[in-house]
View (cartoon, rainbow, N blue to C red):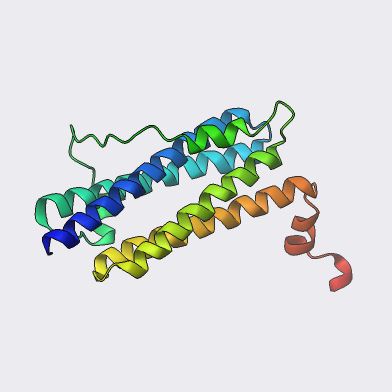
Length: 181
């Protein structure tokens, strides 16, 4: 990989790692604010996914920094970054600012709405990064991340809808009323 391409990839990965770390912090804080057990399960699952994303991005960062090449995605998913590797980023204020937008009377639905905004931002970032990289391995990593962010958004949206409608959509979509046959 050319030095300038390598540096651009490392810069993009640094930003992505910071976003995933911020997402993990946000979901941890949102978990503490959420009273609905279903929403809590959603946030716990998202925390685990953000940790996986962060681990994959750190593995890719290390591979590019040391080898000058992207890792295969499947390899990066199982790779543990070397111990002692620290990624130091400025403390993200977006998660804190988003949570401060919530008042004491904020509902679980409000928290889920803000979480959806974070997932949309991540999706947009990864789709753009996938379009901007020429490396097939890098493109695969960014497309996987964008797909995951999109599934998180849909997951959050369905959870929010479930809470707002008190589960009515679930009955209509999954259970199929008996008058449908």
